[in-house]
Image (cartoon, rainbow, N blue to C red; front, side, top):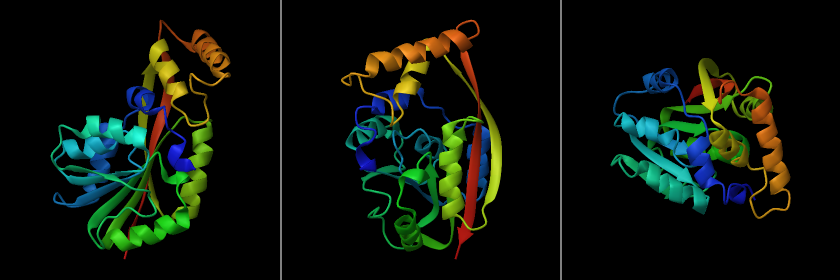
Length: 225
């Protein structure tokens, strides 16, 4: 099940996954009023959620994975306006017509899109903003994942891109590459080979101890009646 794919990876995910540029967060917040109620669906460890909570918005972080929820609680502890909900995207337990803006950050491709569509229409207020946010490296696999899900889910989205260059130390690169769902855990016999490959890539591409990725943060959104 998709719910369990990140079990054992939450700490590395929290430590090494890219954040989001201020310009992208400001843009998303500009789509709604200053008293808007947010829902971050598939919130993971709260990398995106905390950026909204920092700005004082009320936000519900919905996440089904128990390991992710532990890290999410750590991330959101300083923010009284953030509420954590243990639930899947397709059945959030949020109240009917209670949310002004629904966000999925690095998560839409994991959902049952038909069921999630119904859930968004249930929890969203009239005129709800529904958005997906992706950090993609041009030419990487994530571009395909995000385009497949957004092309299916949205009918006519507004799309905005923001530059988000990321620099990795060796330690952070190892954590980043180990945080993906398809990469092995330390208990997996393939783990040593995985780490060797990751180290070799860092050795080949780093400049003065830093490996750069020219990440692009893409925001897709629509307003629904």
